[in-house]
Image (cartoon, rainbow, N blue to C red; front, side):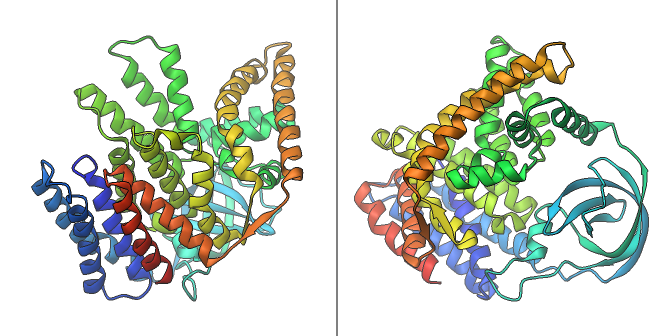
Length: 467
């Protein structure tokens, strides 16, 4: 337990936000969070009190109190009063939204969401003049419905602009936004369809609707969301290219964070970057940290930065997967490493079906090969794309070779999905089993005996699901 104190702080604050969202008064939510964390500490000490237990106990008290003082008040902060805005700004984010498009504009007074018709073509980095009425973001009528405020506040938005008048002032080519814009243009203009879609997703966090639909049919949509897999691949490539020495870790850190920002700085990418950076710092100090503790500390940092991440499906799936994998690969339960894709499918199926209605059974099978294949395929396709992106004559030959590799993968995935066409719909049992499995694996990773982990995981899952 002393090896992963950040997990206790993360679990306590997640429970605090979970209970608060269901209308439990703050004193009761805080008391439950403190009791749950202390229960885990005491239950993990059945075989004896580990060293540094006093420090862990103080951490258990400190962080839920900080959450009650910082996180909950921020979530409940009153809506801003409508006002008229006339200001210069920069387009920070753009994407399709229903039948139209949506952009996030950064101004000196804050960041605001703007909904536009499909014919409006503003791109990231554009300098604009915006004029309109700023209004608060809408909250869901009931828990479980789409909550506009939570979704956009997790991306840093302060409000939305109603009936905006937006005029283009110029194209931005400087900084990270300029780099993203230039790279997107080169990818769109120089690469064949499958290479283009996969590299847009991996390098810029972009979304190709046709490619997204195919991955959804294979149960591998996570491969298109920048996460620990992609960030880890970038660091691995850097380590292979830069020889060991005093500049290796600083260079890897710099390039990794440039990649995270260039890829859109999603919740999952930020979590992965923070976790890897914690490992770098521990290695530099000669004190390697627990992977479980590093994952938890990264998640806790993001919650205190933007507590609305707690309701972000990407953040939840990323944290669940990272916590499970850190426990499976920590030296305990080595036999479970082979079954990691199945365990991840079972652990996350309840969350996925709760949002999308069902989850593909074929994904459990395809992901046995998808992760190792794409760990090689994505970096390889990037290097194959470089000559074409650089405008080198004949570069298209290598790009077409990469296209062929993606095509071959698509044929295999289509065949597998056709042989296993079933979908698992949402059910309380599926959700309960996912929470129980996650709780069991994490408790086992914390050092609980298997029997104790089972005995504690089941009531934890029942409490969370039935509440």
